[in-house]
Image 1 (spheres, rainbow, N blue to C red):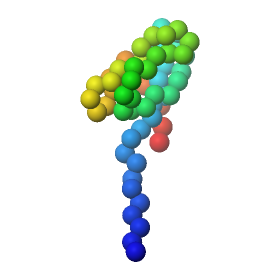
Image 2: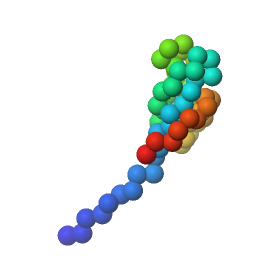
Image 3: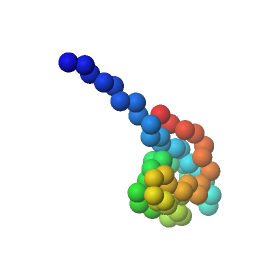
Length: 62
């Protein structure tokens, strides 16, 4: 029996809200609209496979 290790190709991004500068984590392939928890501004919107990230990406998390 051979076990296979599947490599994770999806990423999370730490983004900074353009309005209030709050930082939060967003999934690269978000399937729903992601809003800032502080001010409610849209940070990411779904677009088929990968999300359209509207905020500044501060860091890529793995």
